[in-house]
Image 1 (tube, rainbow, N blue to C red):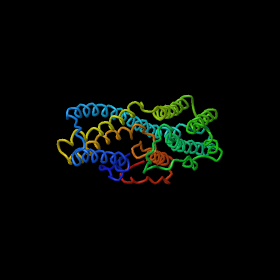
Image 2 (image 1 turned 90 degrees about the horizontal axis):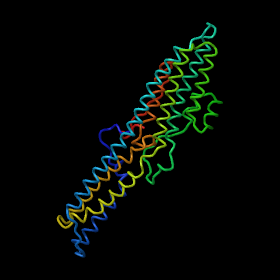
Image 3 (image 1 turned 135 degrees about the horizontal axis):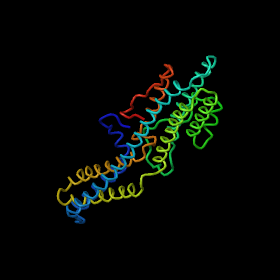
Length: 319
């Protein structure tokens, strides 16, 4: 996620240079053939490009608005994860109560194990959601990516749990099931009453809901018609621009055509880059930052001061 007010031009150029070369080559070629060598006089009326620009603006605005809704929903979902993580940590510390004084230390270790497992769940969910789907991949290399390995969860789990965790098809859901097993054990040992068991189970269910909503966004691509036709329409628009301006302003049509094409290209890229918010790239939801924040608040509840180091924004980007 970009947090700096101004974007670096190196980032913009990285994702647009191929199209910009095409815009320049086309505009320059049209100028040479039309004015310099006077080989042809193909001129399009200004009203043609005006109608196309208006339609394209409406289309891109609609696409970008819906793409932003997906991005914002993803951020809201992970905001809920922060809130329920606070509630979950507080509940396991205050509601799981030993029946005898001799069990107090055992209960304390039991609570810590469940809190640690929750931190593993948060980091595991981040890694799980950032695994790339084949239909998301493009030929553009990302210049900002975060390491995305389940090894981030190893310090929070026992060796047996971690080994089983990494071999399942849905590792975060595996940890949720383990939490449910521990709740049942606490209930059977009398550490939870019926009411407290129900309340903790409800909070645990909310984690299922959060994960399910995240998976829905992850596994349901933005309608490909919008992405495909927006690229086609931007290409057509950019290809026609030089023919509109070259007869009226001559060599000035080159920079004018490039600038206008660049504007529409950026509008198209804005929606294209945020429509999949759980991808491991600069415009995505800052899952790493949120995960580290949740780890910090859980450890604070536990009285642990070994907080993770929050990574500072790199070039104004928080991942």
